[in-house]
Length: 125
Image 1: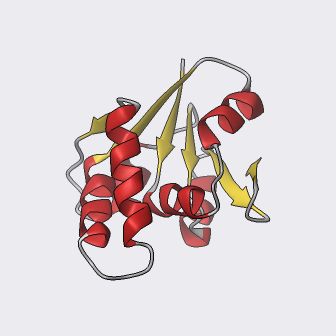
Image 2: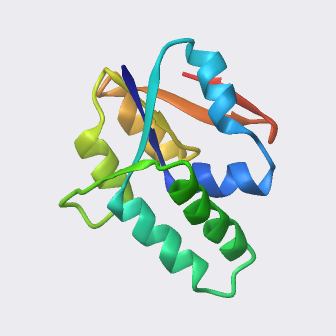
Image 3: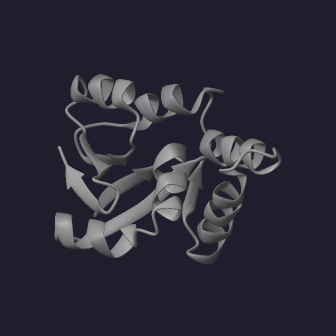
């Protein structure tokens, strides 16, 4: 079973652009998957959800989604979500993120990356 790690900006963007990413990821990868996220991502979503920013409602939707879908949350020692993802990612993981810098750094770990393309579709790289 392959692991898919969900990042903060991917979750928020997916809800903002109304992309059904679970089914799209399953179709892209075509194998059994385990979706998970990190406690630092959940903390970041909580922090964004408490603000008056325009994306706060999407952060709240993402938190609700994580609970409804029973997405496993992994504890990490890193406080920064990007560092935590880099600490967990390996060549058997797929990381769902739209962060360009994180995507570049993940290439050194040979981890696959899924990102939102053209605001409607997912791409894997």
